[in-house]
Length: 93
Length: 396
Ligand code: SF4
Ligand code: SF4
Image (cartoon, rainbow over all chains, first blue to last red; front, side, top):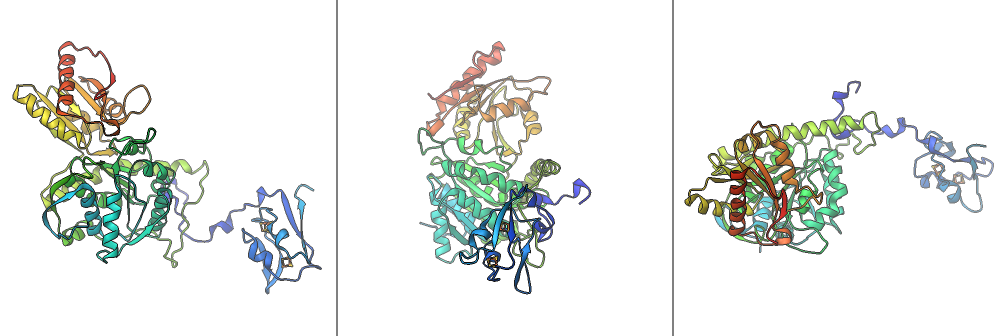
């Protein structure tokens, strides 16, 4: 798409999954921080994250994709009360 | 009652004729919400769906905003999509109209013209579709039931034309045309199928082998290029419309153009007017012609894109022209048709004197005598070269 004349009609992006290439993490004010020692790998956070920003490895919670995490804090709220393995911290600190 | 005739002559209201055209087109999806005076279009069409006369997926939504949203979703999935509405319904679709045109989805919408509230009114004027004139939709207007029926088929071809790919609005006058029964000539299903052909969308959200993303955000470095593409497509829609109308005329013998002229060629004064009121004006013209007065008419059909060059050519040399608007732009400078026609004539060496008369709002009658008094006024302007009032409400 180097040449502007070749832009696809109506702004159609002619392939899928392109959101992955576009970093939106810069909007974040709060950053989720995981306490691995508490985490039970229930993956409720993975289910609930609206931005698919929970990274899993071998079916286990492995951290956050900070290029796409927008810091909404849903994961921290949804992590079961008895566990509370995610804390939100100020991005600036 | 939905009609059962399959061809030939039959008496139909404008709404039933449009619904019958939709039946013959058999779109993949129709998402609609009924509203006066276009209700019968959707009512008749839903009978066709219930009877299995079409294979259309009819989506009965909870509002017109949802209707247009569902149309957009279906069109993005690659479906041939149609809907119908009026007035407040079109107004509620507003936000989505721009999404449909910006995404270049060739949706066909039949708008049965009705006044916008407030005060609330269910009768005809053009404030609904005129308000949508800058939404990037092609617009076709019709004087008669026959023309409203024929426009539906041409609309499909113009919208889906490879050089266009824009949504299209076909407009007819609420009640006056939508509810009046006219003897019209129907096409055969086979003829319709051959004329409109199959719709082959360039991309489809349902094609998982070729995934695409639609409706993505564009920032200042590209947004303008997409608008430019859209603008160029709108320019091309004029030639596409001419091509489609010529093919329609060749196949079915009914000739249509960018606009219709009536006794215009040797006319010294003329009225420019849309839709059903053109019929009334023609009667006035015949009467005045009997008295030897050289009067004529130009009735725009394709309003978007606006065929300004052709219009200027048709009106050049006239002494005085009145543009009659069935909608006010509320700009204190005349109605939308007036502003555009007047602007189209600006480059002529010998410009006609021009006036604007706003008539027929909210279904107010426009009679032969009203057309005659406009022609009388034009005769005076032609004689003196002086315009007393540029813009004025008539039929008050
Ligand atoms: S803060 Fe929000 S976006 Fe970030 S990982 Fe948690 S749920 Fe996802
Ligand atoms: S919700 Fe809490 S416990 Fe469950 S996987 Fe996520 S961080 Fe671990």
